[in-house]
Picture (cartoon, helix red, strand yellow):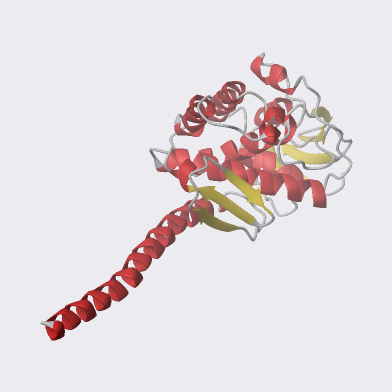
Length: 287
C-alpha cells in the first residue's frame, strides 16, 4: 500500500512538473503571437513614410488601456488590444504612436525653431479654416494638446495610405472616449484635447484625403529630405490646398510656363516646388 501511494505521488509530481512548463509555453506563444501582429501592422504602416525609422513594436500584457511611444519602441497593452475589433482600429492606434516618433524626429533634425501650438488649432480645423501647422512644438512633450493632434494627423496619413477602412481610423478613439468615463486616467491626460474633438479633426482630414485636397506625399516632401515626388503626378492646386490645410504660407512666382511655389512653414522654414504646365515637377533645393 505504501509502495503504491509512493508511486502515485511520484507520478503526480511528474505531471505537475511537466504541466507548469507547458502552461508557460502557451503563455509565451500567446504573447509572441500578439506581438507579431502588432509588429506586422507597424511595419506595414512604416512603408508609407519616406524616412527610415528603426522602430520596435512590443506587446505589454497589462490590463491597462494604453499605448505609448518610448524612445524607439512602440508598446501596445492587452487592455487596448482587447478594445479593438478590427485590424484597422489597431492600425489607427499604432499609426498614432508612429506619428509621435516621426514628430520627435522632425523636431530634432529639421525644425528645432518651431513655436508653440496656439490653442486655436482645434477650432481652426473644425471650422474649416487653415490649420495652424503640422509640427508646432519646440519641445516634444508626451501628453500635450499639440503633440497629440500632430500624432493624429500623421498617423491618419499613414493608415489611410495603407488602405485601412477610414471609419476604423476614428472609431477606436470613440471607443476610448466611452471607456475613459469608466476608468481612472493619468493626470497627464488632462492636457490632451477631448477625444471627440480629435475624432472630428480626423474625419475632416479623411474628407480632405478622399477629395485629393490633402496629399500625403506632398506633406512628407515638405519636411523629409528623402521624399521624392513623381514628376507631373500632382496638380499645382493639390500642392496649394495641402499646404493651406496645414496652415502654411504660399507664394507663386510665374515665369512663362514655369512657376515656382514657395511654401513657408510657421517657423520660417521655406521649401520651393517647380511647377510645369500646372503640374508639380519636383522640389527645388534652392531656386
